[in-house]
Image (cartoon, rainbow, N blue to C red; front, side):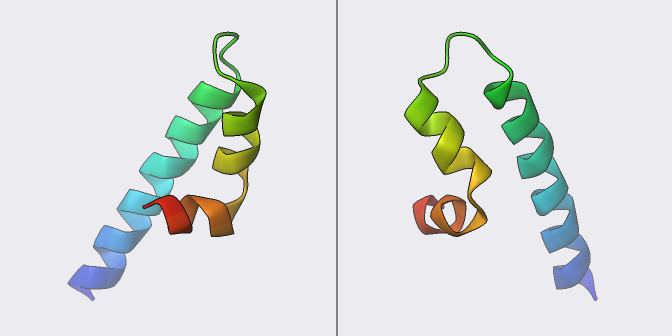
Length: 45
């Protein structure tokens, strides 16, 4: 139960971070695509 709660919190934080970074004007478009793809995001982490 504790692991699933921690995973949900971490997933929520990544989602919020993705939104902030993807709306940033200074982020390269390649990173926008990588951060938006759940598989690639997991691969990097």
